[in-house]
Image (tube, rainbow, N blue to C red; front, side, top):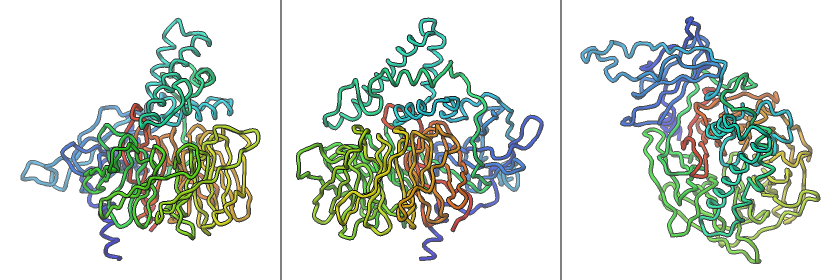
Length: 578
């Protein structure tokens, strides 16, 4: 077992060897620039990750291993711009004097940057919302618009610039009318996306998050002031969680696709990504970067959506209701169960499935998998042995009826309770899977706080990402009390999910609007920030590989119309927790 584990870790994170691509990042005065991202994008004909990012040390030095591929280097740091374009890296003749190359490897590279007050292109989308003083408006704007894409994404900023340059859209009324047209377009895109499997959806005038164009357009006018040509004075708001050992490896999946989530699978060096635009799971070899598709059999359109690793395979809930699926990575085969309801009503729409503190699939003591039914606002169960299923509708919350959208779901360590949150009405609660009764119920003061995805620690602490409010809630499920609600370093970051890390005993928070991952330490109540190496780093879920402590996530830019990177990520924070 020990030899197998060592081999596996070596495949995922090769040892740091004498640097073939190394150098310094300095400004025009020769002053070293620390904590800068140096991104090596490989040449198309070279195997391995699409791009690998390292960070400079206090002296501005960076180094890639001797296995670094040929490609180009790009520098990215908040408050700086590269002086020149991308720099070639990985001289194939390095270390071979007979071939005309320098002895001892490629000579050190000097990458020049200059200070830049305009942070556009480096600061995240959330930076453009930092001056919204009305918290309620900011929460409602994020809840309405940041479900499929960031706000304001580059094309949204281009539209704002067009409005600012057009004399006919200089008044609040005309600008609101212009934004109404965009909201209506988003509604129709949503209508097509949710209706493409043949299920009945609302009309294009009022779909999913956009809804009635008028209120959302008013929020856009309030939040997106001016031409949005540049952004200044944004800071990460917490210490950076980077060292010279930090590595971010990105694996691009060719278009067309709409990658939703990516997970590791224990005992392999592969990542598995769900594509909601089609019926396939995508296997990514972390060593070579090779990709292999595993289509879901049949003619029905399901679209694998949420992925939860388990002992017997990778469990997947579909984008479209009515089924649950399991993929066996060893056999390369799917098994699909159609869920038949025993009562009239909408089909079961599985969103999240019960998982434990290790983020592995968890069943109750009778072997049933529990899930959140986002279509029926219910907690449901499924027995893989018999194929039977059932559900229990969540009681209405006085004053907050409608648009409940039950979302995240996790199982307590005693396997007697599942905890769930309702995204649309800012509440969470528990269901006893033995007595089949709803028990705890908690509401957040703001109806737009947006509890989205949650996780639970092995000592029963529930951590909830508050998407709209930009906060983290910690709740003691055993004592039945709120430990605290903590402001994230960026309140417009749209935290999508929390993940309990059993290796480090911290909480990771995947954000959708900040191009960053936050780490929360319950022992100090402090945050740290791991910035991502590109714009549109829209994250939905994050997993921890318990063998190595690596973080696994993906850029979840869906629907397919949404622009942005389509990549799975394997991240070594550089802290060697094992």
